[in-house]
Image (cartoon, rainbow, N blue to C red):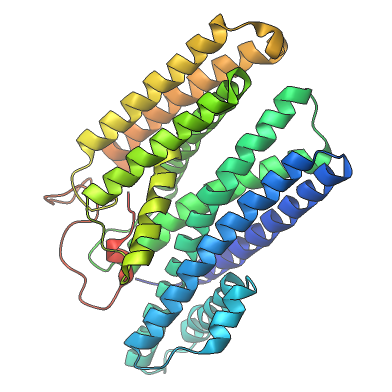
Length: 373
């Protein structure tokens, strides 16, 4: 387990993406208000505020838990900082400050105390992993709904300006970076787990997640053109199924009941868009059922749209989008099979489970109860 200069640069890249995504969201909302598209502007701000508030809640709770574990009292300044939506920036500051010390100073000086260096290494890895978890939450709570809305507006009007196109590209990059970075950081924080090393496994994992997600998001956008109420009902139903699945698996991520229920609600929301293992159990059957239902739902939406009057949508966009949805779904499933068949870190490891189950982590680490692939 190491934290290299490359890892430090990836952390810097992460905060750049985070800030860029935040700025683009604000610019898009301002442009919508300027163009008197008040509903779209309010929705963009609502998605952003909802994701940020949930992330700040988890961040502050983890700060309190860490201080309690260290035998320190909770500080009111942390609460004020999170109320002002600065918790994530504070975490980036702490992670980059300690990460720079581990990556550059320890890497060039071999005379440091080994115990101190190992302690600092564990600390920076835990901090980076916390950030990757928070970014993952915000990506799916904020980024995916915003991306659906922006794609819907683009297809409805048939044109897109520079700010909207930049926001769409930034959202795609944020989702991709957050998903892969989460997987890498989480496995690194668990000493008994194999790391996701190599370019090929990471790219395969990225393509599997991104292509299956892109296919589903575009399918939801098409269904919005048919009936908004049906779309909202479908998404709500899928969220309830995900919430029930999380409750059935009796997740144990948070110390308080309230935060645990919030965590399960977030898990249910993530399940609307992609699959994650939430308990470290065998996932072949649940994952097969999940993507089978996803494929049937996607084909069902395309069938309904093909039989619906095309006056609601430009036929110039529909045929290429339909082909794109089918191809991205097929390629996404192909990369999924390739990842779990040839690239998964446990592919050459004899374990009873296929995900996070295994030898218990000896040091204090909340990550052992978190989502994993």
